[in-house]
Amino acid sequence: MTKLTVSAQVLQKLRQIHPTPAASAGRLLNKYVGLLTELVSEALEQERSAFMRKRGIYSINVSKLHQCGQFGPQRTRLHKWLEDNGLALIKIVERGNNINSVYSWVQLTKLVTIEDELTQAGALRELTDADIDGYLVGDAAAEAELLAKLYPEMDELTQAKLLEAFDVVPIDVQSLQNYIAWLLTEATLLREGKRELFARQAKTILAVANQLGGKYLQRKKRSEFGRVYYEGLSVQNVNKELRRAMLGDCWEYDVRSSVVAWKMGFAKEYLQAVGSQHDAGRAFSATLWYLENKAEFMQQVQDYTFTGNSNVPVDLQRGLIKEAMTALCFGARLTAHGWRTSDAGWQNPALANVIKNEDERKRFMANKDVRDFVREQNALDAYIYKRVETEEKHLLKLPLLRANKRPSKAKVIAYLYQNAETSTMGLAYEFLKSKKIGVLAKIHDAFVVRKQLSQGTKQDLEDHVRDATQNEYWRLGEKQLERWGDLLTQEEKQRIAEHKAFRANELEYMREKAKQRKL
Image (tube, rainbow, N blue to C red; front, side, top):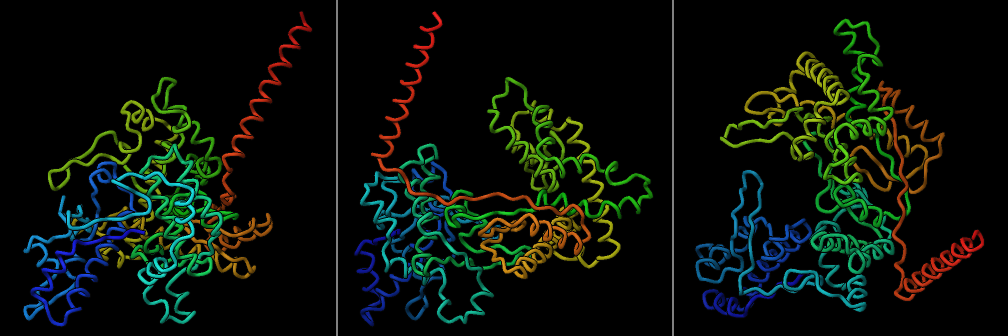
């Protein structure tokens, strides 16, 4: 856990102007330091650049400090008083913007000392086995304090209210501990900042699970666009390895190409509206190929985009193609050039941030399959938006769906999709509940269950949702997640290495003997 210690001179000077009662100044300062500690801890659980880590820079909401604590007849703000009297605990490096929810970059001043279990002088420190064991076991008092900060209302909620406000996730504590130990000892290929970040996130989840008997609470936060998110750390926003470490052995089911499948649900309506005699298979051939044989589609595009002398490693090329196609699915422009923004800035196309090499990006955009896919998606987008103009005009008046005082087609499509996604996944959850199958975690267009669904149950679930939504393209993919097992000891690693070396020598000896027999 993170601890901030403030120089005694701060409290001494505060007591000089705030002498009565004697303990009042201490309580006032403790509250302020407690909030600053909380903000710094939250910043440490977000990704920081190497520059920020080296310079001890944290991204925090300084306005919260401005509002923390008042004293005296003039109701003086403690934060302002500290600044005015040369006792500020933070230094602004780059001021944020409350309008755009951009936090300020700050450094702690010389009046504050930070103690941390993981880092020393801005870098991940060398940890002994005892350090790691202590880190995994945790401090019960510190964990209880963390629990009270994360869930201050928990003791006052009934079970029903608790489940209404939170989703409860069962945590495989041993698996999570193994993952943390791996991060701190063996994850040498991860950047140090990533290792530290992932370890902090995992430790927060572990601390809550230790206090709640192996459970973790995710506070629900409904988006105006229709999705349910969670505040703070959750299965939705942690990396995939931490997710499987949290959940242990389980199965993840996700809607295959969810947004594309949803749009294809309007294909027949579209063809009728435009008076086309073609069936969906011909009119939307590229989209159907993407839906029904995505691996083949992606490979074709990958081979066209990247040449043999590409600087992008082959094992990373597929990821870039996938990211670029996802951007197109959500409305990215198929263009090589950026455009001038209203504030005299310059906006690059989303694809330029994915495929950075200009020649490779041009080949991607020139690919016939990609162009056909985009043309078909644009046709469906235009039809869906036209339906809104005709049947749901009230949506076009919603401020959140407007840009520059005019309705934004991209925002309208996103709003419709996310609401449809939430509704559709609700159908899936009700079906699973009817089969007495518990859902461990919900991840927008995916869910996680403990055991693999039988082929019959999976088929019945898909049929149920397809019938209810009248969308024949709704299908589930499945993936097995395995818990993090115990790490090997040094002796076990040495024994395995020696055995491999022995086997290699033995095979070499046998090859030499075989050569001699041939001679």
